[in-house]
Length: 480
Image 1 (cartoon, rainbow, N blue to C red):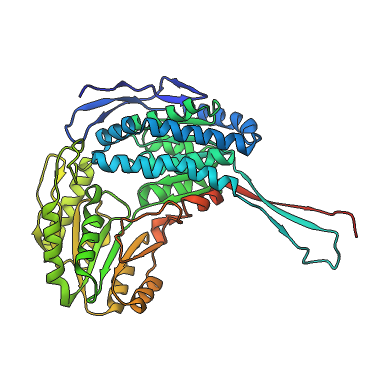
Image 2 (image 1 turned 180 degrees about the horizontal axis):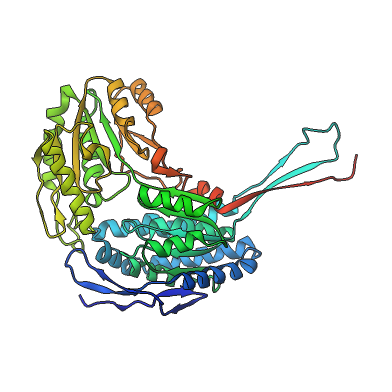
């Protein structure tokens, strides 16, 4: 396919304007062809974008909630109408199978408009009693007000859905936004920014700056930013936390999710979940099953079931409807995947399925005999690998699952309600799924991690806390 052409560098105050930094070629990971070129934003242009958002905030926060909600509803319709165009661009930029790109847009992005509108309409404050004086002359009102300018910094693996959470909820609440999308997926971001503008959100309420980490850092550090919502690596997240200082923030970072399979588990269901957990989006999910812990007595049966599922996956062009797995997005992800496999083999593990790659396409791979000293067990691989570890007791499984520095998503498979409840309570992870894949989400549930997997919670009413300030208003009515 032909290139998109040179992307205008930034969207500021309702207009696409030329960038003032370096040019970056955006490559299609499937073909290696150039999709187009973006021009990054300097610190000065980031400042311009934040100032546009700050100026727009003063009038936007005073708009009636019904007006903001109506714009969300209009954007819902426009986003739905342009779903196929945006989905195709996601697949071209990211290498995500087109079926999964459509799901990202349909169940995630588009529905965020409806969810945000409903949640904002139902957002309620509190009236508290006087607990300090024996009188009836004080009323305490607790409300949440929009924080101001929100900095949204999003990853490439879910380039629109993840960004849409703080953007749409922020707008619905009365905040304004400056968005720094991934430099690997800027063109689908342009399409989404155009949806918001065409829906009628006022100039300056949504702004976009393009660039790498230094652009994001300039945005996070800006004194007029009130909240930061970031999804990315632990290393970058720690830097974002330092740069953000005392700003409100949500950091959704890496994962090393364990899937625990107890001996009484439904093997077919557990193997289905592991295939999704390890191989969905070629393993490039923070919620991936990065370690598959299987009780010793059923290990061989489970591995054979997983082999069958890995062998049935169709690898190829993500634009084809039948494709299950596309390419890895970056050369760095491919190199890390291969390094983790090699390190495991050097330390005694064995590749029992897959292990090969060509160009950016990597086979779904099963590595047996993985132990805790191997990099593949300690670090986030972010590739299509199922590392098999074994245990002999529930206590040992819990200890292995918790020994990581990460704590995002975990899963346990068992027919025992007692064992499921026990394991779920003992795992130090932000989400624990019982008899479901680690790659399972619900847009109305709190999402976030413990330990180095992040701080704060995304989605639905939980994101509202990060995008608002809680205010107490106390007054004294006439004594009765």
